[in-house]
Length: 192
Image 1: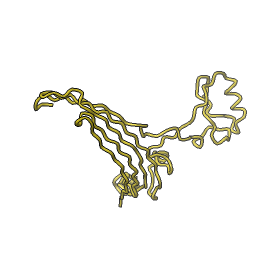
Image 2 (image 1 turned 90 degrees about the vertical axis):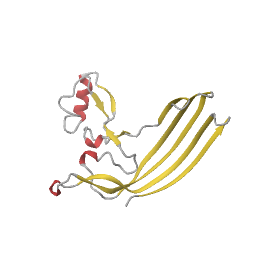
Image 3 (image 1 turned 90 degrees about the horizontal axis):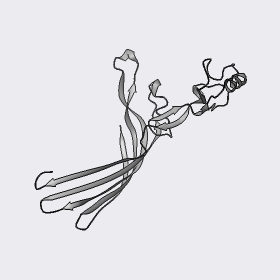
């Protein structure tokens, strides 16, 4: 069963007869047993089902500031600006199977939607650079036989002399750093 515990601190304010108004909210939310689409064996028929797959935490801030730029008896022009950010972390996986294509997507201690990939250290500028790495590699090939000048040199994260899937590192996540927006409302008599 999915359950959520949340603590929220908020402040709403208005000045100059509410011509300038805004709000500030800070929150901390922990969801236990979050529902996520989970794969099941093909022999069972459907491709997936929803299970209480993970525990996740979210912390963030939301700020809004707005006001009436023009206010007369028949016409009002209001503008509102908002900004928010959320930090998300997968606290715990609850034992459900993960689609093999999403293994890097769900990593405990990282945001949901983690992106893993190879870190680029530079671009090969000469064949001598490639030959030196191939000579130092236990297999005789640093990356692949077709590596050539202009290709990316990947970081050998585990220092085994080879570029393999074990050299992938967290390079980002799908969560935006922040959200923001601006809205304008024009109202004339009873129309807006």
